[in-house]
Structure formats: structure tokens, C-alpha cells
Amino acid sequence: MSNAAVTAAASSRAAAAGKSALTRLGEAFVGRLVIIIPYLWLVFFFLIPFVIVFKISLSQTAIAIPPYTPVLGFGDGLSGFFAQLKQLSMDNYTWLTQDALYVNAYVTSVIVAAISTVLTLLVGYPIAYGMARAPATLRPILLMLVILPFWTSFLIRVYAWIGILKPEGLLNQLLLATGVISQPLIILNTYTAIFIGIVYSYLPFMVLPLYSALEKMDYSLIEAAKDLGCPPTSAFWKITFPLSLPGVIAGCLLVFIPAVGEFVIPDLLGGSQTLMIGKTLWNEFFANRDWPVSSAVAVILLLLLIVPIMLFQRAQARAQEQDR
Amino acid sequence: MNATWSRFNLTSIVLGFAFLYLPIVLLVVFSFNESKLVTVWGGFSTKWYVSLFHNQGLMDATWVTARVAVISATVATVLGTLAALTLTRYTRFKGRMLFSGMVFAPLVMPEVITGLSLLLLFVAVGLDRGFLTVTLAHITLTMCFVAVVVQSRLITFDRSLEEAAMDLGAPPVKTFFQITLPVIMPAIVSGWMLAFTLSLDDLVIASFTSGPGATTLPMKIYSQVRLGVTPEINAACTILIAVVAVGVIIASLANKRREVQRQRDEQAAQRG
Image (cartoon, rainbow over all chains, first blue to last red; front, side, top):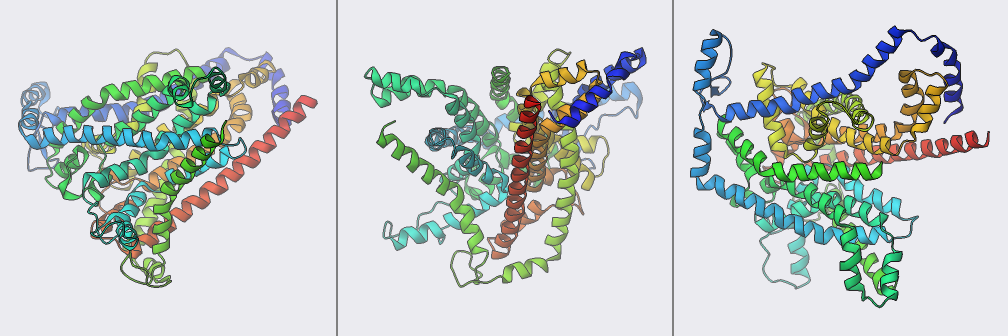
């Protein structure tokens, strides 16, 4: 504690002795405000928008401003409001389930996100392990180096891969020059490019929770296992991996959930040949200007992700309890 | 630890960091390329940086982005700090589950959903899309990141310091500003930095919530990237990377100095 703080605290001692009921009431009010302000903000800007999305997903497209009908309102009194309510329908959802394009987009997105998550784990685990076992003086620098790319623009990092992956790009130039291949590889505008993009962009999200789980681990356990004659690989699977499981779960959820709805990566690296739901929603909204259908796409996407999101929150809450 | 494991560790770190940094390094290198072909080296040149500064559209977008980022990061830092205090200090109140849900969900929520839902809110309340709506959207997204950063510092905060101050008669509000705030300041600063860069980088939410006259830099870059890779975009990206890198390094150095100072104060207090 700084010296100034001690003096300040001491000087107000006298004042507190004669604290009136009114001041105490004021303090209770300030305490409430700490909760109320961010609470109301999130209710208004995070929760209510979802209710609106749900409502519009039940509406019909219209050539108007805003481009959907009905626009719920009390202009015609309460009966008018109820009449408008009756116009809501599940048509958009029926439409989504009947069109193979949407079903495919959802299924593909989940599969692509799942494969990318596993790949990110495979790439990220050795890095996090290496960092956790690095000399203690090096660790903060390594940690900084993992976080630094996260600070540079997502869009820029994805863009950088276009120049590397395209047919006349740097990777093909390198491989052709070294004679590894004789024909340029077609990577850009394929799912492979999407996998590379997701692994690259989300790698810090995987490495950080893995690192914090592995760093806390007591390595004398491994030494004990070794002394007792346990080979390194089975020591890894029996001790290290189970102990790092909270990090594995947190990392996988941090990659999987946003990856399912990813837009920038499939759009820039996947091209028109690949299908993912984030891109479908974007096109539905910006190209087709169909607000109700894009809302329905968003609602189903949210329903798909609700279980992983709740798992993520439980993992967060548990981690918080342990740190306390 | 045996030698093969440590060699394995070293290799994985080196390869991992090469993978993380090589694309960014190549992007920066090719922004100095004389040739218009981005992937063929034609000699060193800074001409793309010169032409960048004559690109009025890009300059306007930069100005809009900078203002949105500063305003939204500042408001988000205040709201996020309050949210972090709520999460760590008020463990029992009605709707706490909902509150922590609303703080953590935006961290992983696909941006297309957040963007669309905010846009529909703005339309429903009759707010014209533009500078204000992008700023509000960015505040909402980034305050949750600030909350997580500040919360992780508050969890490890030694509350006996606060108790001591209050035992000595300092009112809670004063205790907060004179004891708690200085200690969690480094986390608040990194929260602000994170909010600032997230706002600076965001394409998807800005595209949904922005309107005419409020085109942000990522929106501008995106629309040009779709037309093809150009050295001018590489140059713009390089400047953005440089700005963020310098900011992060300055902030972490400042944080480190503050931390050292704090430890010295604590030691002095214990001795005294």
C-alpha cells in the first residue's frame, strides 16, 4: 500500500465516527449502481437484441423500411398489436429446413469447426507444453510473444495468408523452387485454406488456457512416475494430459464456438466454392437484403451453439472459483 | 527432464513461433516491394506508403476508426471495470447467473450474430446507423473483454488492504479510489488497450452497425482486399501493426515500472 493511501485512510477516520444514516444510504446506492449500470447496459444491448432477432425471424420480408413485416407497434392500439402478432409465422424456419443449402451450411460449419479445433489443439499443445517447461525467466517473454499476434488485426492476419497460399503465392514459389512439387498446389479457395486460417488465427486462444493449466502442474509427479519405471509416453497420457484437461476444454471451446460462425476466414480464404453458415448469413443480409431469413439463420446458429456456450461459462465459473 | 524432451520443447516453440510470425513478417516485407505484384520482389521502395497518404478514402476511414476506438474503449473500460467488480464482489444478488452469462457469452459469440442482433435493435429503436451505432456496438462487445481482464486481477487482489482502510474509517467509495483502483490500474490499462485494438480490428460488427459516412478502416481494407491483394493494403496493414505493437510495448513497459514501484512501496510499508 502506498504511504499516501495510509494517510488518507487515517485522516478520514474521524469523519467516519459520526457517519450519518444518510451517508450510509448513499453508499448503499453507489454499491447498487456498480451492479445496475453494466447490468442494464448488457440487458439492453445484448439480451433485448436477441429477442428482436427472434421476433424478426418470424416476420416476412417486405419492400419497405425496415424491410420486414409486421413492424410490431401500438400505433393501432392494443387490438392492432394483437392483429400484427397473428401475422408472425414459422415460414422462415420451414424454408431453412427444406432448402438443402442451409442444412449443408450448418453441417459443414460444425464439421469444419470441429476439425479445425482438433488441429489447433495438436499444433497448440506442444507450444504450450514447451512454454510451460521453459526456464522461468523466459516464460513471460514467450507469453508476450504468443499474445502479440492476437493484438494485430484478425483481418490483416487472414489477408496475409492470401499472398502465401495463392497459386502463384509464396508457398508455391518455395515448393516449386526447391523441387518438392512440379505443379503449383491449389490451396486458396479450398477447405484446406479455411483450416489453415482458423488454426493460425485462433492459435493464441488455444495456447493461453493450455499454458496456464500446464504451468500450474507439479512436475515432480512426472519424475515420480519415471522413477517408478513409467515410460514417458504413458506418463504423459496418465498424468500430464488429465491434469491439463481444464485447459484443453477451455481452449477447444474458445476455438470451436466462434469458428462455427466464422465469416472473414471462409470469405477471404475459402472463396465461393466453400460453404459456411457465417458467410450464408452475411450474404442473406447484405446481398439478398432478406432480414427475416438472416434472423432465422442466426437463431438456429445460436441454438446449435447454446450447449457449447453454457459449457464454456461453467468452465469459466469453475476456474474463477479455483483462483479465489 | 531428459535431453530429448527438452529438444522437443525447443523445436515446438521455434516452429510454433515461426508459424505465428512468418505471415506477418512477409506481409510487412512485401509492403516495401517496388513491384505491383505482391508476391514477386522487385526492389525496395516506400512508394506505397506515399500513395497511401494520398488516398483520401483510406485517410477518412482511419480517422473514423480512431475516434470510434478511443471513445468505445474508454466507455467500455468504465463499464467493464464495474462489471468485473460486480462479478468478484457481489456473489449473491438476483440474476447473477444471467449477469455472468451476459458477460462471458459475447466473448465467444460468433460476430455475425452479435452484429445482426445489434443492427436490428438500432433499427427497432429508430437510431440512424452511423458513427454512434458503431461506437455503441463496440462498447458492448469490448466491455466484456475488459471485464474478464480486470476480474482476473481483482480475484488475486488482497482484500485485507481494503478492510484495513475501512477499519481506519475510509468510506467505501474513497477506499475504492485510493486503494483498489491504484492496485488494479495495470489491468484496467491493459483492458483499455485490448478494447481499443478490438475496436480497431473489427470488421463484421462494424459492417452490420455502420452506415453511410462512418466507414471504418477494416471495412475499407476488406472492400479493397476483395478486389485483390495490393502492396498499398500491405502498407496500410503494416502501419496498423506498427501502431498497435508500439502501443502494446509502451503499455507493458509502463505496467512493469508501476509493478516494480508497487512492490517497492509494499516492502517499504512492511519495513516501516
